[in-house]
Image 1 (cartoon, rainbow, N blue to C red):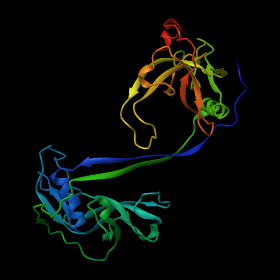
Image 2: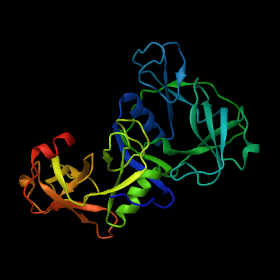
Image 3: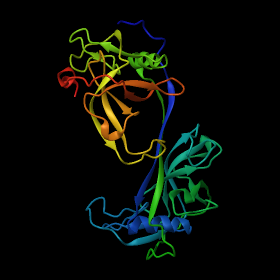
Image 4: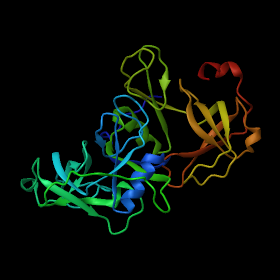
Length: 319
């Protein structure tokens, strides 16, 4: 059946974040361990330049680099940009400048934050020095930020063997992306319907398939879809998999079944978890119905209806 249009398009802030774990080679391990010990190390390239931060392979020749060089903790700003509204996780909580700093003795620049009262206090060519963090663990955050400095440049460097007690061998870096998400007209209608314990798709005016969740256009015909159609609530399991690895933050005991479910009247199967039945009894053709979440905003899982299994010919086109 057709349904009326939904309210205005939804918008909401969305944060995507995860810990990124990586092991370190000898060059990066020495660099980060050095920061913990208030020592900045670079690496000498084949052409004699000192690269800071150091890399393990020459950016020009791709040769392996291992000659570590200690450089100064002060340097010169090569370029900068003012950040008037710091975000969560950035080096400073007050407005600051992002700067590229060529440390004394280095030939390349290091990106970090400069603590300055305003953009008028920042300029290309100004002298700055590292402000070390009070607590250091072997990470780029061991440099709390840079601060203005009136000392002269000292370009002398010296060889460093990269040896430290208790070297850092791996890091965990938090990756984070903040943005505002809008699901669009079609999926806004879909989400509003879910809040009423209904599932709504959109019918293609050309091929007449009903897409759930709706996309606002038919992916086959390439034409806009505007006619809203309520489907289900019951459906048929078309394909499925058994999940044996427990996901972090997901309070579901393994093993469990995740399936493609073709809701009655839909032209596309959607994803859903199957519950209310032993995992080894789930099968293609199983007839299921939604069990709504406690807040009633979405199906928590699907359970068997007790109906006879659907004939294969009724869902083979939706595999």
